[in-house]
Image (cartoon, rainbow, N blue to C red; front, side, top):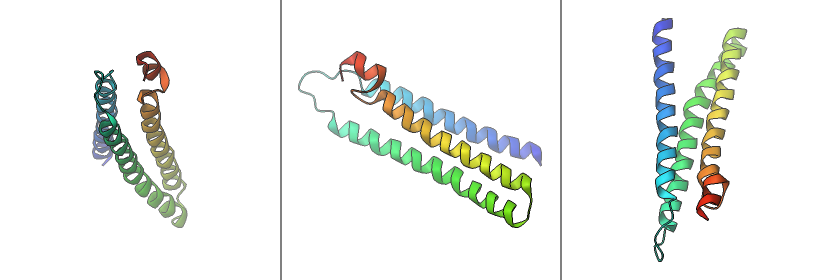
Amino acid sequence: MKFSKSRKHGRNVRIFLFMVIFALMFNITVYADPPPGVETGNMNTLLTLIFWLVRIIIGVGGGIPSLIKVVQGKVDENPRDFNGGIVGLVATAIGVASVSLIQSIFAPGAGAVGAATGG
């Protein structure tokens, strides 16, 4: 049983890391200086929507099962389940915050990349 749980957690970690790497690569290519006269407003709007979608997926995918675990642990008076749910909520919050951080670093006009490119 523990082996299947570790596989599931490993798969979730791989999916999360893939999304983070994809977001980094996508932002680096999108926020390069466009040629003069090229409008990038639509692409920036699309990126903002994608980042909100990723935040919602991480928040719902990690938050709801963690909340269920917290409630079950409290009702069953099982501190292990309760603490596991709290850890899940903290991990979910860190995931959502990391997506926000990645977006703020690579946004035009913000962070090191935006300042270096004059965006």
